Length: 400
Ligand SMILES: [Zn+2]
Image 1 (cartoon, rainbow, N blue to C red):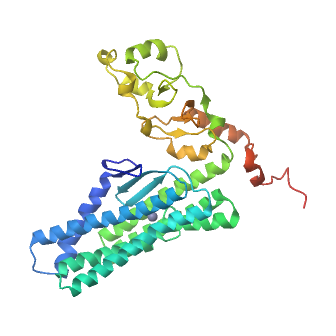
Image 2 (cartoon, rainbow, N blue to C red):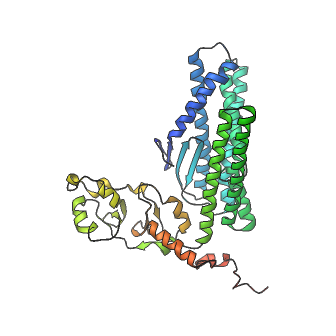
């Protein structure tokens, strides 16, 4: 997800906000300042209500960040790299670079989010009681109570067993553990997500019609719609995963890509390399062959002609941390979700020493898909340890 406002890095994880997060802060602050808080503690100044509303909304957003950081910390402890944490319109998202390796890891990463929200809810609840007995004003106690309730609600809602909610991950871990089939578990959790999404949409529309509940019901519809979309995408990815089971990045990459020196002027690169090669993507490498950036023909085309002799490739390249990087032995299904962003859908493959050894482009992926379709129901040849997990096909059924 795009980060419009970057807050910084924590343990290598990009933390940021999407524009939608500001919308939700403004919306919550306004609902509190002009609705709930004046009802709770009448007779205060507008400034007091607005200040309290903004404080509550910002602290709620910080609570969501804490929930995501808890996911990220447990993911890291389980060997799963975390790319970014982004707060957006409907909440927060911790983007994992790879899938958890076991149902146990999946369960731990999922459960800790609602758990931390529950704990935060408890802390704010205790704070509300403490503030009240210490004689703090109704407004302050009201803000603490609001934060306690919203955090508990966040924990409960996210525990609904429907992907991509945390409860959906718990369901997936359970089905995975039970069947030993990760993709089947993903499909089950995604279906539950789609059903729950539809229920939310119907409930939201029902509320709007019966009770004329305005914003609240619209929110349910929005959440439901997002769940349906996200669950459908997850199901699609799981089906893809099933189709591409056992295929490694090395099987699909174009090996030994044409690389370029980052100090080459753009004009010289066009004359000497771009005109004579049919590639559209060129990794930039240092003297040791390690990735320092990536240029695409689209980026080169964007350089005005008069600047092409003064600007170097390094000036116009995607930075290494914006380029999806994969290892040859990695399952290709782990790479697919990362192939977006600056690099026009390309990924660079590096070996254990960090040297560039290959390139994966969208056409490599579509060729792979076409070939796997040709194979029909036959599984792709399985490599190494995957052999034992091979499902028996009708032609190769084991004698019972
Ligand atoms: Zn969560």
